[in-house]
Amino acid sequence: MCNVINNSNGCRSIIDPTLIDDERILTNLLLIQNRYVIKSSYFHCVQPDLSVSMRECVANWMLEICEEEQCEKDVFPLAMNILDRFLSSVTIKKSQLQLLASVCLFLASKLKQSESIVTSKLILYSDFSITEDQLKGWELLVLSQLKWDLAAVTPNDFLNLLIRRLHTRSKGKEKLMTIKKHAQTFITLCATDFRFSMLPPSSIAASCIATAILGLTSLRNNLSSTKELLSQLCKLTSIDFSDLLSIRKSIEDILNEQISPHH
Image 1 (cartoon, rainbow, N blue to C red):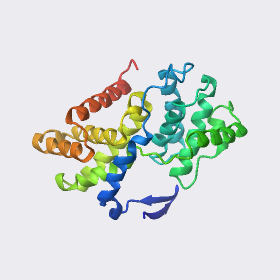
Image 2 (tube, rainbow, N blue to C red):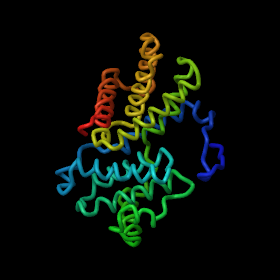
Image 3 (cartoon, one colour):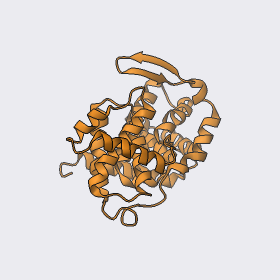
Image 4 (cartoon, rainbow, N blue to C red):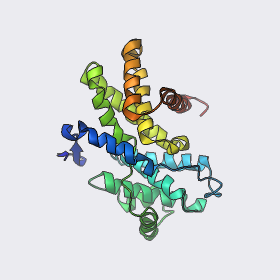
């Protein structure tokens, strides 16, 4: 069980080392993670009225809301997972996408925070294009379609588990916290990009950690130490080294797009 602390943003759980160190937790997450990964692109076959760019646009809108509301880091990736899983099975009109996105944020915040995003805020963020009755109706629709199975495994679920196991191979708790902070940012960016919605969460988490590690000069300049860390990530998540590097390349592409003046 996690301990709970109170602060200005409400109650928050903190890491329980007993759970993080339990190998069964990592094993079980690896076993069930694919249950929450969509199998193929839903554009054209299921969503002829939608496009990848529309998903990206609504994802960025959802992320802005999470940042404005100071949501927990787990809220946005979970909301995007709920959205993708629903869109992979139910055809909607493009005029309904923002409504669905609002519902996914609402549900994710209920699961991951002590206090959910209030419906009046979501209506305001939508510029009053949705109503409270629509939110309630679509909330039931999403819950029914996903069979109330909303507590999906996301890349964030693997972060502490993987980084904790890198502890004996790296130097200093502060460096590990930097790796975690950067990896969380990369996971958030991955959630905005549809390419990552069909990848196992553990592979995304490992690749984001790898990207964070390779971004630290002190580790990057130590070739043997870096290779050891990356190899350990591959072993922990059963991902091929080439796949790890390939996903990391995609993450770097997103980062380059973010900082490009032409984006």
